Length: 340
Ligand code: 8YV
Image (tube, rainbow, N blue to C red; front, top):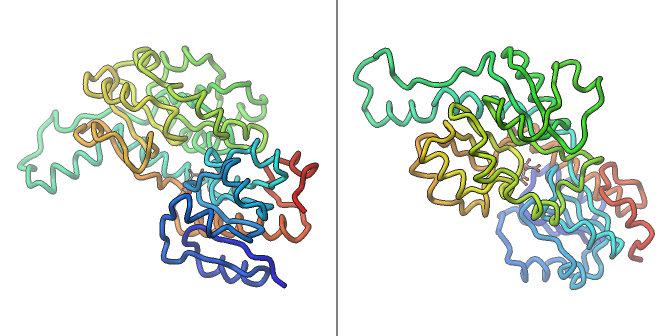
């Protein structure tokens, strides 16, 4: 008899077709957002779940779903999964590293340019019929080429961004918990600096904390709580008045209320944000700000990349439940406690 698995949100037909060859699949192609109790009810009797980054998987849920042996996230980040709770209960957890790096880096460059050169603002002005002529001081922005880019995080995605930034003749600074190897820095002439130096020197401060297997603890629930306000009022004050802040990592790393204040008072010049605290219910203070470029967490959303993410998660699930080694296992220690 095939094992039952649950795919918590809509995926591509090809993903379902692949999973169907191995499992009895409970899908959600109408893409309903299940309440927690609905999700738990759905997971009864399931051996595995292909989850989305918005499903909270914690100890309580795992205790109420004793059959669950694998949780495979359709995202590289996994702050929605309590990894320690999974490990303690012998539940395998996986993510989707690698397949989204270039798409996220492409989108990041778009957001950087849109923020520095006020693309959204210009379009709103044009659509509102306000464009009556061209004049010298119209919609003046900050230059992207030649700017100093400060990356918080220098993992795979950070390096993919640095590669593109070099094409714009940018100088690259970075800060992460430990310095990267010289071979990783060299192609971009990237300079490792303290958090304070980065905030003071960068024209573009860009958050892309690493979500590599080596640094996966960045993404766990506790670490995110610890990092809440990593960029708060104090840090924003250290930035240049002409600087922009770009957040491609996770909401909660930036104190959004403090950011709104800084943008209102123009103590920093602008922000480009793909992620927010409490998304999708972002702080409404952002909506009135012309100097905030707002994006609904879609940096990875190209069709080929989202297909690759869904298939990567599905392959992890098949490997996990058929005795193979899931390629992106986040918690190898769970094996010692594996559920029967
Ligand atoms: C996803 C992301 O779009 O992979 C991640 O960690 O943040 C994005 O690629 C998002 O998590 C949707 O599930």
